[in-house]
Amino acid sequence: MFDYLILVPIAYLLGSVPFGLIAGKLAGNVDIREHGSGNIGMTNVQRTVGTPVAVVVLFLDMGKAVLAVVVARIFFDSPGVDAAAALAVVFGHNWPVFIRFKGGKGIASGWGGLFVLSPIAGLVATLVGLPLIAFTRYVSLASISSAVLGSLALIILAALGHLPLAYIWFGAIGSVLVVARHREN
Image (cartoon, rainbow, N blue to C red):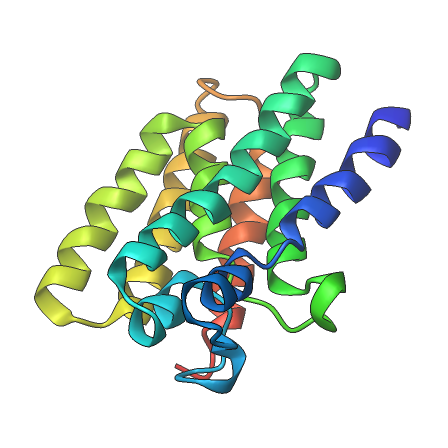
């Protein structure tokens, strides 16, 4: 229990770092919350500031979850803590304490968490999302579909014994968060 009490708040704070907002300010003194969708995530950064900056934001937001899980694995050796750390980053990204709890939709952070918990499930999400974006041009459709099917792959792999059962929590809660955050789309 002590491991959760230490790492989950730290992971939440890490997730709360608003890289999209910071990148907008650095790239052109733009507050992306005042443009486009008003969201601090990669898609709004791409539409507002441009693709090169958005790619940097994508990797930084993914990296938040990757870092949290890697730290969890190094110090705690508990699959439950791994999953909780990844989820805490997504919660922090979606509801960041540093900018009045108005954050992104958790796609990049969730994708990073999914990849580090299960590269196979991360690949499933990618193979679903990229073609959907290419053919439909609807990022929200690709995000929701990728999150749900990537999480389903994670849950199936865990249920079959190929991954720790604790990862089911990340898959189930993570996909619900993504769908809920996209409800206005």
